[in-house]
Image (cartoon, rainbow, N blue to C red):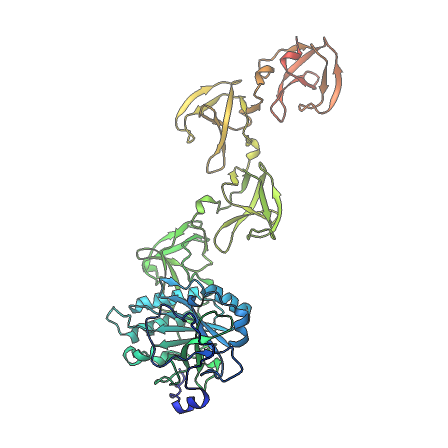
Amino acid sequence: MKSLLRTTSVAALLASALTAPMAANAETLSPAKPDGQVKWEGKSFVTDTTDTSKARTMATGETVIDVSKWQGNIDWAKVSKTVDFAIIRTQYGSSVEDYMHSTYEKQAKANGVPFGVYSYSLAVSSSDARQEARDFYNRADKDAQMYVIDVEEMTGTSGESMRTIINAYVDELRKYTDKKVGLYIAHHLYNQLNLDTSKADFVWIPRYGSTAPAYNYDLWQYTDQGIVSGISGYVDLNRLHPNQELNDIRGKSSLVTQAGNDIDLTKFFTKNPKNVILKKDAGVYKSTTFTASKKIRTLEKDTVVEVQDIDYTSTGVPRLKIGTNKYISANKTYMQKIVASYDNFYYLNPGKILLKKDANLYDNVDFNTSTRVGKAVEGSVLTIAGVDFTEGGTPRLELSDGRYISANKQYVQKVRADIEKYITDVPERVLTLKEQTLYNDFARKSIYKQYGINRTFTIDSIEYTDAGTPFLKTTGGKYMTALKTHTQIVPENVKQYYYTSDFPSSVTTLVKLSEFSDVNLITKVKALPIGTTVQIAGVEFSKDGVPRFKTTDGTYISSLKTRFE
């Protein structure tokens, strides 16, 4: 770290600032930090950055604010007119993420306000500090121009000094960022904390009023009663040391030397994904150091793994912890994040699907009105080219034409590659074409009864095996094959037709009929007057399951019994 600038004399400061509180705009406003327990030394002056008609107490040079959830809804468009830099709180220890930080970061960027981030440290040990550092980095916006560790309390309970604990915090944070890392140090605890400021790129100290900090500093928090356009209550204001510029506390650090900083962390999970699916076989190791002697076993490709936490090697390489002393790689090349409810989706390519409901089609994995490009109707059978995932880990099915459809099992059903050989629309009634076995259970382990041909059954539903084979469930709760060579869909009133293999060799018409060239009775061949005798070759079924006579001439006529003598 550069040598810290010597403390600025009080006289020099007084030459550029007023020494009494301002009366204007001093009406009661909400405090900058309502939950603050520490009262910094000195008198906090109201500093109105909106008042350009007169000198502003201590507000010389760049205007730097620090904000947290206590500032509520901020109008960043207004803030951008007077503020040069903002420092946004990310968390209060690991357990409490500041719920406003993401909003502040997005709006600061949208309005051109450069910003850094800070974390209030509650670390009780070095290991705790490293976890806080990882949480801090993972939660903060990556466009932050610097990071600050806020040290205001003696939090150590492990027997380690605060110096050791905060050194671990800084060291861990530097594994993930090459940007400047600063220390915010409570003025009244400066000597007791005894932090190693040589590890930091800059030091930020609070001391309210016109008297500068008694210790070397780069940034001075001089009031918690700042008034800034766009912020409804008071806000902390800060000023740089007279010999400093903003670039001295932001941008790339000159202190980054750890080997871990050569790692491209964008290629790794640095935030617990909770569940991952393996793209490749992956070794499981008993420590974060992956060596042959520490390998326990290999997990196969397509395995879904529950992740407990993320640990790191000594050089900062992330590892996924999947159990006690069990680790796998965190490299995204080997795995894909998947939602916790993955069992509700097809996350492996099902090959073919049948739509249970109408479903929208999209041109990418992010489903919204702007990406919707069409619709597929219930009952459609679609070929699937592959499975992709959203950023959040939701599986999407990619069709052969590059469009996407839901992988949710409520909408789609995996089916066999030869599904066209099976009944997939629930029929009212079916007829056995071959001898069949009916089962008491879907697993087909308990036989109910054997049936011969020409038996009819009413059907309640269709159920599918994991492999996508459909089985018909009768209204009596029994299971039978849906294979079309064994089972024929027939209408509910099928017994009013000649429909079995025991058909008459000839029939004589009681009414006028027509002969057709096709079983669906679409293309008419000729008319048959009353009393015509027709020779019958067999019974066939239309696409809707209606029985038809096939004549010895190869034509088709109705087989409804009331039409014949």
